[in-house]
Amino acid sequence: MLWTVIVILVVLWLLGFIGHFGRALIHLLLVIAVVVLIINLIQGRRGL
Image (tube, rainbow, N blue to C red; front, side):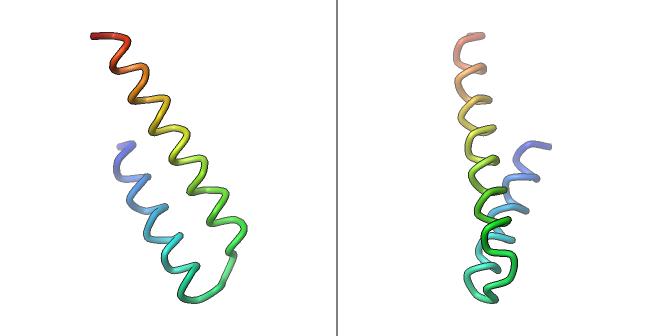
């Protein structure tokens, strides 16, 4: 589920570069997705 959200946000981010629509919002969503991914990776390693 998390990977699906990340892929969708990356695609929207790339479309934002191409179409210049909602650029600030898409960049913000991408940053949030990266932060969630890092937190998920850290928590996964800590559990091992």
